[in-house]
Length: 630
Image (cartoon, rainbow, N blue to C red; front, side, top):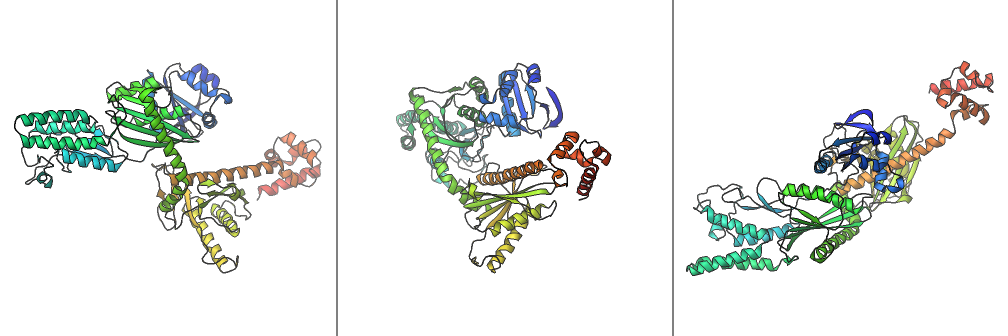
């Protein structure tokens, strides 16, 4: 492995040489990192044998998946970290993915914070609260729940049935008088009364049993307590317990028993349509289905098994509660290392299983059906909802059904081109794509070039709802200025007498890549009449659409510019010199090898070419002397 002499993100990058890799890579467990030409980590993987796994990327193209082929086209460097065990490699891989967010790894993004119940049993008089972030702080967390309404309704039942304190403060604060909850017989009021800790703890255990899904066990215990209270002629206490039992039974009636074994399980189903995957997690607690959670994942060319494996690694790394059994719909490669890691993380044995029959298979089908239903609904609603969301997020006056992206490309101001791409309802509209050769001699002037293509596009009519400009505030101001001027001229009849003042005027925004020194590393969207750029989450659908349009315009501009350069290369500067035909051009190129050497040659050097006359030598020298002075 040959050192490339470059260090990025704390990792030394090495050039990819299959022969050297075969001889130097260790045959042990570890983590490998592929990097692009700029030293950025684009993929992190783990291996039981680094040598075998890395060399598998260099097989014949036909044996590799589409995603792996794209990865290897980008990869220019490699680094690896040797570990002592496969499980260490697994944990290191997860940490490095979280650190670098590599382009070709499946990244689980979920900006939703689902509500959970929190019961801090470390306190002598704990309260039941609703939180949206699970912390590993010693408290008990129950959930997450996909519906905030279901959480609030469940808490109302618990508040009515169990007399835990309702104070908002985490720690109990002494009061002079109890609150209204005590008057309503919904709280024991330990803030003002001497409540035995043992009695309060018993009530806390009952709440815990209820939230863990052990409702039947709780009811059995309460019936025993009611019988004891009746035997002791404490009929008021017996009546209270009776009301508790009725409240719990009413809640249990609404729950759906899905597993007769009364065990805790997570059931994970996956559905795929094209490049989009939907993952649904069913929460089964005490044999009862208590809630669901769903994730949308976009990844080009990844097999379902790889998506499932990435989901397990990333989802459970941040969950406080891990059930003893996890049912999955796909076969995964690293089954045993993941089970060992989860067992170590939760402090109990965790089994991951793909059931083939029985209740487990039925639950997997239920999760898969939910995932497919959500995916169909997502695809149907995505287009219209995305456009409505874009209107709201970008502060537009109307829904941007048609968006056109503008970009320019040039090489040191020469052979400048501009392109426009058209998107309708968030999808490419190829018929609306346009290429422009910059006509004005303006040198290296991005604003001038952008102004020209905007002016020429507006003159063609049939304008979009929104122009998206590749650039910053200056590019945005340039296009807006051109748009205002051209529309004013058209309204006045100087350009198009048929256009009235009631005709819709396109809106303009711009998008710029993140600053290298920025800590956020997010693309910036500039809006009119706003000083600071709009910064959206990296996985925000509106930002992703704007990036897609910008990248499509940039890709087309680069391709158009490259095509013109290649065409121009076939017609060299020698064609502009009188007396130099195809035959003498070949003589010159075979002697000097390229145009650059010919342009730098002296008269004496040119005269050494056999078949070139002195007059032709002088003509060639004069031509390139004029070119160099431009």
